[in-house]
Image: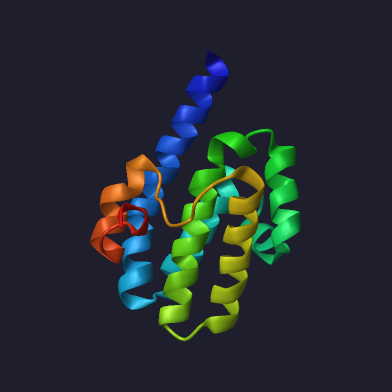
Length: 137
């Protein structure tokens, strides 16, 4: 029960923080906001942001597995990485966007997530920023 409460709390904090920083990352391509999204992903898996974001896609998956919370947080990690990759690419940062996209895809494949379907808590934000959810088509 304590573990479930802990996971629920960190996911809640993640959703709140990502909601706050993803908007400017998408709308303006603000590098600090993009990095703040990455920081939230790193915090969720208990890694330093610089280290986490430099990992190859497979190594990022390994770190999620080793965190012991991969199954609980994978959909959130997958979503955040996919959406920040879109922000980077939309604002000309193709290399960073490509790496984040590959990281997102590796998480999706390893944990059975769908990057096109946002976690329930982020669905309204996703619709606001990206239009109708692709999974609803």
